[in-house]
Image (cartoon, rainbow, N blue to C red):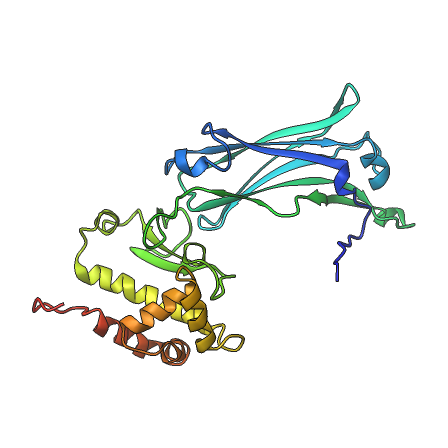
Length: 300
């Protein structure tokens, strides 16, 4: 059944708004940005929009009242959002607006979600003058944000170096974070990521492969726990056997990673998921044992 969007005010038809979004800096298309962007480099997006003549009659807003174009960019890993806005103006019978969104390259990583909004004094249709205008209403936005990829997923495991101090994370050398909407069928590249704290003295050794084996064992243990815990959250909707069937058909899924990790520590996937929810400390100990954490006798 189709779902119609309902708002408590007059909203324009989608055909009444034309928008355009492009990368100004660095010089690139949105699709090719990951090939040219370098960590630390700022990104500037240009947002443009034009209103059709019927916009004003559809919304009931007098053309003399300000309607704003808002450019919005969000980086979830950086836990940061950037916005800029501009009022629509009329020239030669055309109502247009343009604004630049400047994104701090020092904190962003993985991807940026870009969106365009129209904000203005919406008409509610109320007979009460006090409630007749909804000031600052979001009159329109894109059906979905534009996903701007910043990194190529060529690495064996999705890894990003980022300042934890600037992004509000704990002061630890690394952290493994799952995507909140990731299910067993999601690709590993979009379901889970290792963030390395660029403020830490351990960052360079971890990233260039010269850290001690125990460091990598601890990172692997964290990956085990996060992957199993994320998959365990789906146990009521999808059995471990179903996850293993997914893994057999698609080796790039989160389910496939979980199945491989379970085999590497000598546990059935069902038992690994149970331990993740019910006895996480036992799971950590089992993973460390399998990864030979702390062994100094040379047998690994």
